[in-house]
Length: 342
Image (cartoon, rainbow, N blue to C red; front, side, top):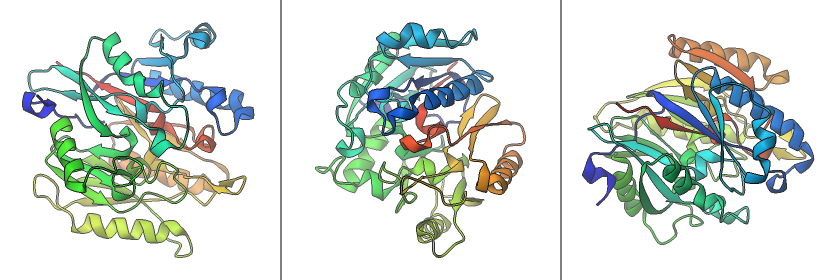
């Protein structure tokens, strides 16, 4: 029996949340462990920003529990002790689905650290079932390596992803594109997949869509674009734009596309940083948006302006997007929403 057989579908991220989950960073797993204190401050800022809108549960390694608890005095920030290897809960946490009768369930995807890039990942692969068990949420184990940052849904049957990630042989080499689509239909209740080609340049996740494009509403997609032909992202985003312009969603609608200008190029120790405003996170009544400052001050302003115009009823809450980006991700990558169900 699959979730789809029981009317479960994945709600869109903008649907009401009961809480947000986020994992506390681990120094030993970091690319830049000397920046641990700075990164913890970035996580603290992000957690407090989300807590302005909804409850937050911080997944913490047991040995760090007392120390992390002492950081937060807010009533709607709590800690849950679960062992984990790394801190990107969007990718190793559960994906929640809801049934027509209001029942909640969670999909436990297989996790292999973005194609085996960061060993060990055995603890991360067990985080999702422990969260679901703790909250008494029904669990469906999916036979698919999948990360939550690799797809978006519109809540009306359409899923957006990239070929670069989902068809990468380091994830599910034994499965065809059609077989992967079928597993997504069975577990998320979608009926249509829109395949972009690639994610943004420098993205070590092999092109997660949550840096490149996202739904603003059914039939409406926000796309980060690049206007500089000398930038690798120019060809990537132009190709994705053409795909979206020709696509129709599960309801047969052509897509309205909102373009968001990318931040200026930035790198750290010779490696490009994948700066993206689309790595924002919907919260109840708001949006938590990473901004980058410095040379990006103008595009920061334009991103806030564009998102406020797109979502006039939501408060745009900015956070320092440079705090954790050296580790390979940003706001959306760190978070996972639990939908509010009736």
